[in-house]
Length: 243
Image (cartoon, rainbow, N blue to C red; front, side, top):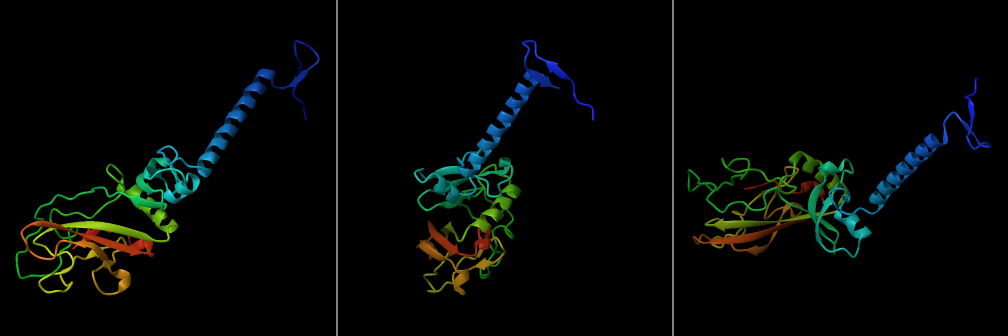
């Protein structure tokens, strides 16, 4: 095979094959830059910063890498793809829990539904049935619901348990215990992410508890009930509707 021409340098004594010294030096610089970039990317994976540019996989990963960091808002990217679909969450750095924000943290206090038949006691779904209602979405204000749902799917796969609190504000509405009847027949029903119904009583795997119950009777005043649900079946959360 024909060989590339050899060229002698102006100073004599040293030969360069095909390319001159400047081209070789430029290529070395390019390789060096590439290696530094790869090294930085590997370091970002090994020790994420929880920023939009360098999100962590979960708050647990962030806690493991930075055990001295304080709880607060950080960015995570559970699917480890392009960081453009990363979501902002609250990280509890004491427990490593990842807390996902709802798209709408508060729902206006008003009369959302008036039954045509006051004697009718059936449950009515807020998002599915009420004309001005909506199903709950997550990821914080401005997040793309489709992106968040994908990230939540990966987050569920990594998690061993999940929990959620919902504060129900009431006025002449029973949330949990009916003080007049002494039973839970009028208690609200929650709809989980996998379309399961989570109730106040029944199978213990599908029942919620309350930490505060201020909606036990019709007083004409505003009150609130704090509902809590914990499960090892992470596919059941988050809650998407209430009746």
